[in-house]
Length: 197
Image 1 (tube, rainbow, N blue to C red):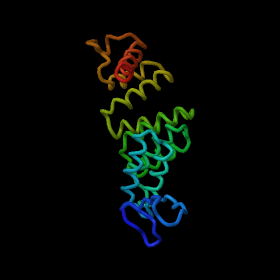
Image 2: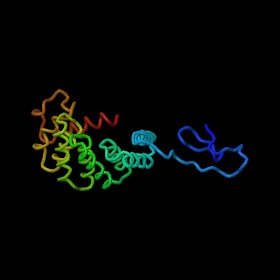
Image 3: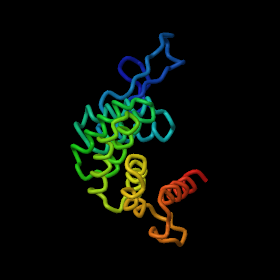
Image 4: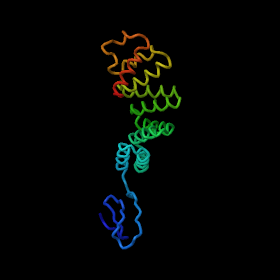
């Protein structure tokens, strides 16, 4: 720690501390460092997010964007946090910004589709899922999401191609051996067992 001109104690990062041994009993306000880079704000946002402090993570990601300008990965993380906080409209806008900055960002397209689907914008969700597949044809999560949506919209026939893109749902059976509608249930069960056990 260092002592500033006004007698305050500060860490090298700029964090101020109370000095209980100082002559004045006046409390010293705590402040965050005055200058941070976009990367530092990004790292701080990730740390907050990992700790489950989503509001703080959102603010750190916003600061990163403010300091460094538009960045697809920061927009993506901010959108994910906003989604987790239940701010679906804001999340959709940040996912859109991420794909505008990096058009081949399959994960952002997929998550945009998920948010749009929750907002009731089915046709736009369908377009987002298709953009995700165009960006990454082997991305299993988007095949699952698109197949599930197509299954509910137009039935298993149109969804079948995308169920094939979901790994480990065949249990030794080829897609052609499954009855209509069985593909979707088997794929859903496989995904549930993978992520819920």
